[in-house]
Image (cartoon, rainbow, N blue to C red; front, top):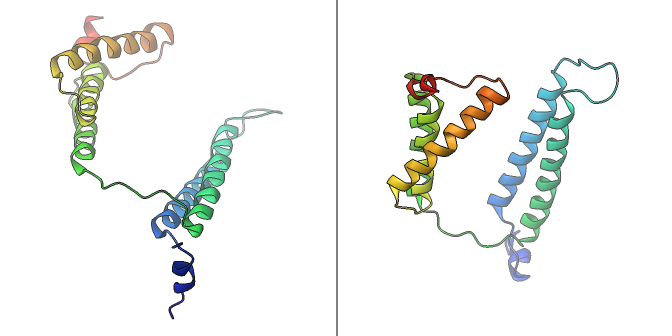
Length: 162
C-alpha cells in the first residue's frame, strides 16, 4: 500500500500542479509585500503608495490558500489540453511590441500590432478590420494620455502627426 493509496481509494488525488500554482501565488504575494516595504513613504499619515501592493498581496494569499485547499482535496477541475499556437501568437505579439517601440515605431503602431496578434490568437481572422479597430483605439488612448493626462508614451511617426 503506497502513501497515496488512501487518497486514491477515497476518489481523491492531490493535484500537484494546483499545489505549485498555490506556492507561486504565495511567492508573488511575498515579493509584492517585500517590494512595497521598500517604497519610500511620502505621507505623514494615512495610506501611502505601498498600500495598494499590500491589498493585492492579501488577495493573492487568499487565492493561494483557496487553491491549496482545493488542490489537497483533489477538487480542482480537470484541465483541458493546451494548444500552444495561441500562446506563441501572443508571445510574438509582445515581442513585436517591444521591437516596434525599440526601433522608434511608437505606441500606436506597437500596441496595434499586439492587438492584432492577440485577436488572431483568440481565433479572429479579420486582420484588416482588426488593424483598423486597433489603430482607432490606440490613437484614442494615445491622445487621452498625451493631451488629457499630459503623460508621454513612446512617440513614433504616427504620434508626431498628431
